[in-house]
Length: 360
Image 1: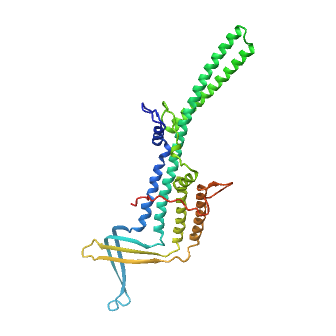
Image 2: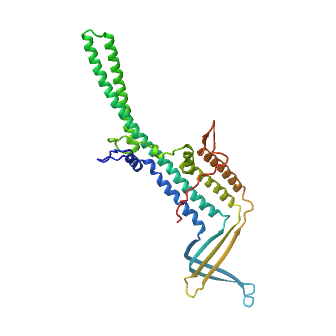
């Protein structure tokens, strides 16, 4: 979305970054982050009971044909009798279930959902950094191309004046025709460079509008960012390992994969649950009896053999853990000496942020 208006010009680099953060459509990933937030209450629902209410109603037609033999009046003569009744029935009930133990799957799913939320937040930070970097790059490229364009314009003006002076000198016999041709050639090359600079400037303007979301105005010179960078290399490496969103996202990815293994292993544990049911049914005919059933049952399920799918899922998730650890190693790799390696054998994972998603 491109915003146009009288206040669309960005005079400073800082204001340009603000506009890019507000207008760039790539940051719509916040909606995906809010979708990840809902995984936490979904996982927490495994701790809570489930309650349902049922109601049924209808009509039942009952008919029974009986056969009897009267030995006194008519020997061996069957007597048939029929009993029929049309009844309306009503039934109401409530069922509550509570999981007591499911192999720690609920706890692991909750921690996995929280790690997914934190990883998604770090991924959003990566996107934000890329958007802001693109904005700063577009800003500085536009300043550079504008300066180059002004330089080429002045160069064409100077070459035009030099050609005029050379022709005047040629008319009085001070220079030869070759000197005039060389001056004309330099002017033609300068005009060609001017056209190229104009094309680059228009391209930078379009890229600025694409990244920032507004048309460029008068831009102030950029300011150095050396004051914001660490003074020494080792400190920069430490801050990168502990604060880089790419490293933190990879670390949370390892947590998610490890918890997926524990969830798969939880399918091999027994499950214990509690079910409470209340049912009341009665007929709508007069003088009918009302029947009430109340039950509280505990159910224990011990898996013995389920086709091997659980073991396959465990092996699959373990392979995913290995891949996520390799991604973390790639994110924390630094150059030391003549080869690439991790930061020593005593390397420890980056410290996670203590801020955790709010449970609902």
